[in-house]
Image 1 (spheres, rainbow, N blue to C red):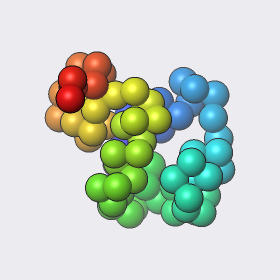
Image 2 (image 1 turned 45 degrees about the vertical axis):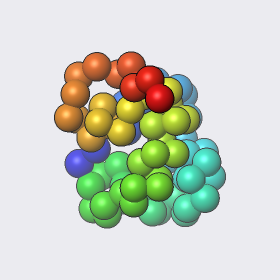
Image 3 (image 1 turned 120 degrees about the vertical axis):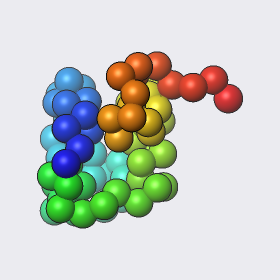
Image 4 (image 1 turned 120 degrees about the horizontal axis):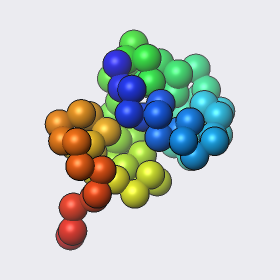
Length: 71
């Protein structure tokens, strides 16, 4: 399960359909990403991190710091 992805989407007042459009996937696929029923491809994780201005590690729950890394 990816609760931070859902939380970030809800905090931005976006629907699953809107996020699916950002990732160029169906709403069903995006819903399965959020629920953990489908693993999120690395390209989609990177796109989500960039969209939400955070790090992939934060999305995956590997850090509690939402600030993205400096390149």
